[in-house]
Length: 160
Image 1 (tube, rainbow, N blue to C red):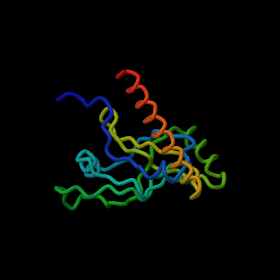
Image 2 (image 1 turned 90 degrees about the vertical axis):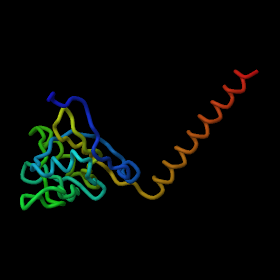
Image 3 (image 1 turned 180 degrees about the vertical axis):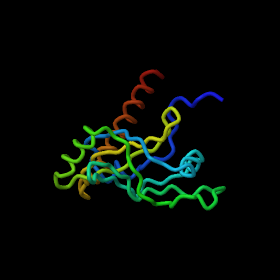
Image 4 (image 1 turned 135 degrees about the vertical axis):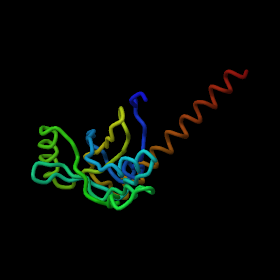
């Protein structure tokens, strides 16, 4: 059987970009058990309540839900256990320095398989206020209306 190639998305945190300003992103590997990998290959995971932290020079992924493997036995994993993130030492040092700044946090953005290995994309995020969220929605609506008007005018010109 040939090795997997490419990127296969498992889970995505759609609320993250709505609730936070994403300053920087990192790709990290995950330390997983066998039943966790099998559960991820089935396409099951939830990143919505998860976050990451740096403690004692190591990065950890906390509160990410990977459900128990349905055909697992007594060797099954705990669904919300703390998992170690695999990052270079320089990246961990950089993250630790940026997280000391007030108001920043690490949140998971997407989990995927890249060439057969489980990876997670984490973002250095700053929380949005309610007025920031409204402003973002207004900008999105304005852009949508602008593109609609442009396509309508192009359609009218081409039809005559």
